[in-house]
Amino acid sequence: MTFGEDVEICNIDTENKVNISVVLPTYNEIENIGTLIEKICKEVADYDYELIVVDDDSPDGTWKKVVQISEHNHAVRIIRRIRERGLTSAINEGIRNAKGDMILWMDCDLSMPPEIIPYLIKEIQENGYDISVGSRYVKGGGLVITRGGPDSIMSAFLSSILNYCIKFLFNHDFNDYTSGFVVARKGVFDIIQLSGDYGEYFIDFIFRAINNGFKVAEVPYICQPRIYGKSKTGTDIFDYIRKGIKYFFVVIRLLILKYTKKL
Image (tube, rainbow, N blue to C red; front, side, top):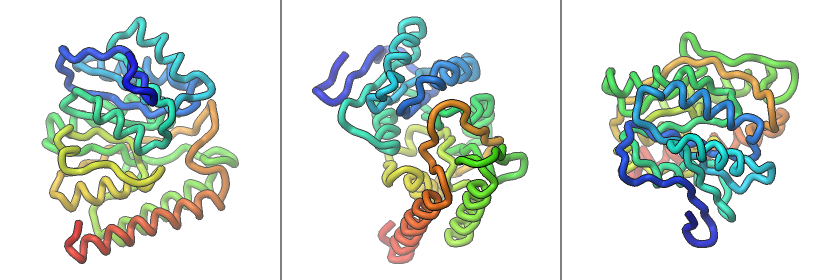
């Protein structure tokens, strides 16, 4: 099914009510997406679910792979964006098309273990939280370190320092401001819209959620190194420094909005 010239959407079922919508933003993840979908479907099998892949017209044909999967699993559907690009806008596209009472999104490089999903859902369904976040920086969480690349000791150190500084500046009892592994009640998005570039959006989202009185839980997970494909987080210390500077501009902007009561 096609809507306009920019977006193609397959397998829309507007009749069935779902408990949880899983949104997967993808770009060149053909080697990971099949395994990831299989693992996620296993973890949410006890729920009425849908899985929405929002693909930015990946040159490697990720969207074609998802179309093939959707032919056998009708809970899976693909939104192929022809012209628009970007992680935050892709997640927003998935949220707009989601029918679930809860919405989950995560990275698609297999760094975030789907086995954690039931624990994230439990915090909302049983413990009364509005948002549940997979966290590397609480007890039981962490990162698997590899030699060189985006999972190196240096990148892990810079990530932990960045999150510590953001926590200190915000003065919130929250630890992983660059997670991106989250389940939230759909009603949260009636109040908060995701905005910002790669990574920045999550800092903005969590800050606004806490300041709007939403209850936020953190669930520990061990972040795994990417096996296939190229990391979009950063490849060297200069990438992390550039992103870190952008993150701190977001932090300062949010603090100014808060203390001028414009947030």
